[in-house]
Image (cartoon, rainbow over all chains, first blue to last red; front, side):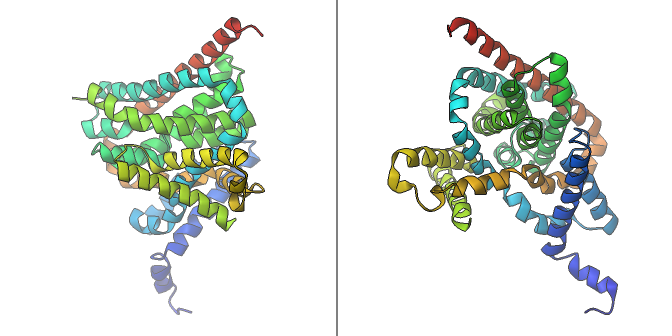
Length: 240
Length: 127
């Protein structure tokens, strides 16, 4: 036992244990609040966990690198979780097969829209080219988007932030938007939010409706696949 | 449980080997997803495959456990926003507006495409 609480803090703040614990506990708390509010879209657990941890790091003068040494164990699971999407896809393969044509068309149209709209809007807003390139893969899951960003020589850490913000924005806006549009087909609603807002949108869809969740998961995984193929092509056409 | 997690990691690893080995521009988790899906379908036809994690819902339970907490996995990358404070001070508002605009357009275009195609099909294909 250390006699000086400050030296104990200095020691702990450099260990992965502390930051992994903080990540899990803060998320557990924000998720519990989200559940208590009946999954109100504005009480998004990722959004609130992000700023609470961010403020905590800032207040304690901890660098992101130090934080990430602990949080990387959670971050790493993004890859295996993408592989795990094979299971809902397999279990609902009949449902998916029955809607294969609407899905295929919505996938291609949606994927191109997601990339082209963000590149055009970013150019319209006069953002620098690195930023435009970093935003391009923003609709796919973090691990994949960061990989695409790297291959474009953009800034993967900015891409990660754009990915998370896109996910949160989609998760917040999807229910009110779809209700206003009068769309009651939960396959279509789920598919759209999975495509536009990857895992965070998919998590939201699972909260609303099981079928919506399945279609969101499918859209998220298929979109990761074709965005990886289309971003390099579309970006060379749109930028430069 | 351990074998099931091992199988999921093995699929991703195989995806990595294929993508790097053949120089494919595909993310390894997505290749892993396709591999696991093929394995699950194959085990329904080839009985000797249905053992270990591929029997008794092993890999299914492990996957659902992971997917139940999908949003948690985005928190570490999201906290990375603190590294981008300069960028946010310079372009934060523009980036937020661009992302919000793109998300709205993408949601509407995708959902309308899906619903319209599904409706046209139900008109053309007699029940």
